[in-house]
Image (cartoon, rainbow, N blue to C red; front, side, top):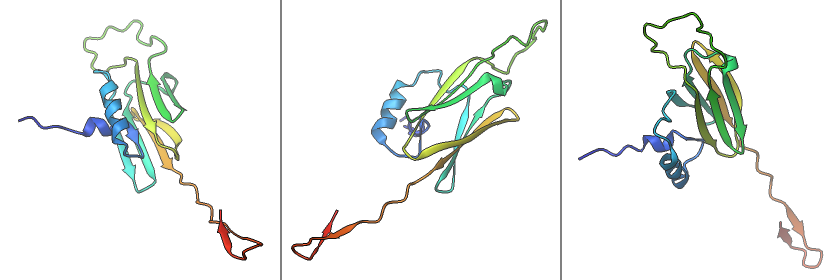
Length: 147
C-alpha cells in the first residue's frame, strides 16, 4: 500500500487553508516546479518566511513581485560570467526558474534578502481592526436601531 502525502498541497499557499484552491494548484503544477528547493516557515501567529536556495545567483539575477495576491519569484543568469572557464563538473544549477505562491488577504511582503546563497522573503499578516458596532435611536420609537 502506498502512502498519500498532502505536503505538495500546502507548499503553494501561505496564510490560509482553502483545500479546493490548494488541490487545484497542486494539479496544475509542472513536473519541474521543485527547482529551486525552498522552505516555508511560520514564526508565531503573524509572521512567515520563504527561504529559497539561490546558490550562484546575485541580487540582479532575481526578481520578486506581488501582483493580484500572487507572490512571484523568478531568477536567471543575465550575463555569461563563465567565459574562458571550462567546467570539469558543474553541480551548481543556475538555470532559470519561476516560483509562485498565492497569498491570502492581509499577508504582505515586508522585504527580501539574499545572503549566503539563500533568498529569504519576509511576510507578515496584518489584520485590520474591526470597527465598533454602531447603534442609532429611532426618533419615533425611542429604541436603538443597529446598523
